[in-house]
Image: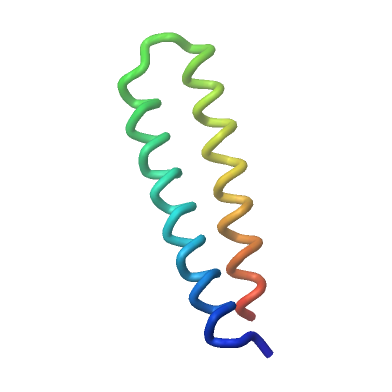
Length: 59
């Protein structure tokens, strides 16, 4: 069982991961360079993985 402090930390980190994903999607949409877009897409995928891993800790 997670403590209230641990739950708050996970909640905070979920919010941070969501923000990174949102920002990277925005950056990617403004880029013209395909290599930079690919880099952004890889970062988005990695942070989605982080987000899902955190969610799994809540189940």
